[in-house]
Amino acid sequence: MEPMHPELMELSDTTAKKIRQVTLRILTEGEILSATEPSRITPAILTESVASVIRAEDPALLRPFLQP
Image 1 (spheres, helix red, strand yellow):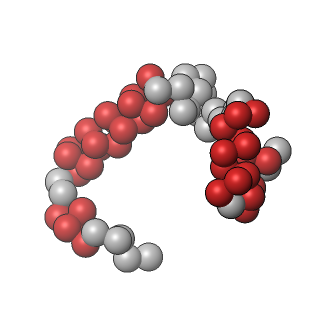
Image 2: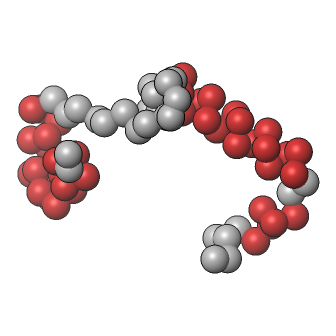
């Protein structure tokens, strides 16, 4: 699979590992990923008011939030 940004293939191994480490730390601190091993994506919970706005715009946009 070819990357969307071929210039990423030019990164050194050290740089790629550091980018991965920082990205995972940001996602964990933002509570998007759990801090436990194995990391899991934290599901987003929408308030009814937010869901109403999304539903008014396009109900299909709610599908990702309705998956178990």
